[in-house]
Image 1 (cartoon, rainbow, N blue to C red):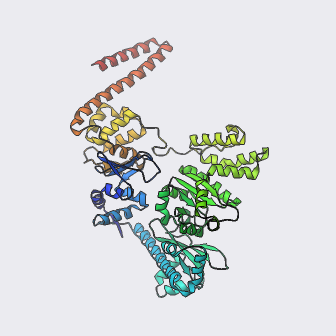
Image 2: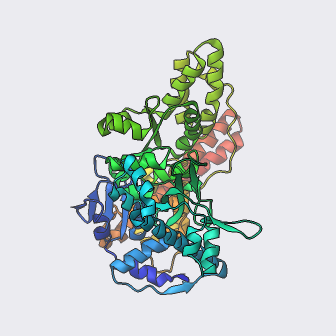
Image 3: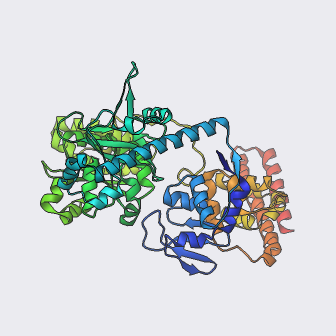
Length: 583
């Protein structure tokens, strides 16, 4: 197996019409040289999502997502680079030449594909058994009792593993390689003494899909008595339950449309809701929500609603997830079902509209946590102390977001009737980390005059040497501007094109460059010489202004120190600067 050559990537980028590709998912309107639409990556009412066919780039001025046609496919469809490239190549009839992978890459890719293949084969066997075999009648009756219709069964490729220790083993009989793969995938268990048996027996099976639509594991519910009631595949090279959400592959478009994802506790809660027309739902696989889960949810919608029964275990799980949502800056809410109800029973008794209303009126997650802590501990002296202690993990999660932490402290200290200092006095000091890479989150805004210089140099990079001679590096001292200027300097003499600059820059700078590239050129090409001269004069004047400002400060200091010799030297230097500025 191999990867794709760089010239193949270039062919795809050149052939793919970015307006056509994005226009299949976003309604675009022409605005001058660009196209404008509502951003598919965050909720907005006023279009700020700009597509530049000339540059082959997109940029959202709201959420700052940006990139080219390949990165759009990757982000919108959650594809790998190679899968996005292959899809575009197929759409535009391009044959991709490949490069050889390293032996390690080759072996890992081969193993992953083989594990996916054996999971896909098992899913097909179990699905067909459920649909057609008389021995699966009980499973079909069970799904009917849970109001899961045939269309949902087919969409989610539900299956049934019969009450047999060797159903799958017999189906794979004679193929030792497939048996070994089934063992690696957790479909078959091999004991130390060499005996083998099927892991899933007498269970309704829910194939678990990754975001590319491949079966990577299974979740099984026992039919009748038996333990454990629910059983998942063990983790493997292709299945990580801490980074996988059941149903998200099928729900991704509905989640985007709804601009929220409802997270439920179990697979069958999810299936029942989908059957009732609430398709924007996903479920963790027998674990509490992890940081990876929350990061995944953020890619699809700006809001997540946790739907559960509100027992003590649920509250604790919700509290553990708060730092994850705070870190990802993803809005999280909680909708609590009445006692003795799960989504299935609630829908059966009250209907879809009632459940939708419950979701729409969900409490913000921190508010929910606080109310539950008050219910548990009360607002007496001892209770307030316990609440303060239990809120500390949330405060620690905000250690590096001072604004968020200040708002949190002000809000909940008022509810507790104590000062913000009292609420935060047991706060553990934030961990001191190495400064992160430059990004729009951790760097001050780019000053307007430095941005104007960058705009000109990105559109007309051949002037970089002249600008360096004029002292542009003394003006572009903001970390973002400095990095881009340094990269432009290193590219002198090369055939410049935007993708080359983007490919060489740190990804955290792509948004700034893309935003500039999809904007209007600062001047017409025939006016570039004139504009460059004006900017170089401005740079020189700006440098003199700064030098004079420094000299004035030094003169004042020398005057206060009564250092007449130094004072006269500095005054003479300022006089020389004034004269040079007048020339």
